Length: 246
Image 1 (cartoon, one colour):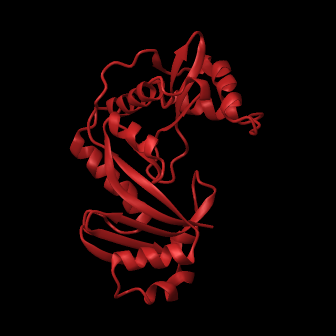
Image 2 (spheres, one colour):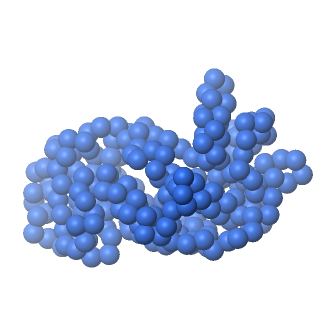
């Protein structure tokens, strides 16, 4: 695949979040749009839940996408402001607030000991996984998941003294798989604040763009460290999503 251009990344990112909203975001550039959709009652692939309410605030636009059972609730909000909508949603539901990021341009050119992971790295990855997820049982699924993703060259990791100390993984995507890819980042607790996460995530974004895949990043709005990390490697703020999970 050919390397993505900034214009292509913009287009893919808009298309991806359009799938969540049920409306073409390139057309909903200002004002408030309400979208009642049966798709909000479907489990979001890779998330294990339904996004029954999904409100995206982006620049001057507010898109309110919701399942039909909440139609009466949102009909009462048709003539109020974005602030009033967000207040009503936040007061009435347990809302998750996510900062959505769009990749703009590469800011890192050297990656230290970060590498694209291969199948032969699985023993090191399993050791890393057990250290960072001590309550999870990897038996029967982790190796298959790892090998599937590294076959696509979606995993990157930082090596120190023969160990993986930071890993950028690649969860299943709910929409547009193999067109856009989220890059989660995890670092061993005692190896944080050493720059390993930045170099690992920068390589992940670089490798995706080089292979025609759009990088995607989002995190809780309170996670200022994750936002700063994303910005340091070339992401910029895209919008904020207010989500009610069921």
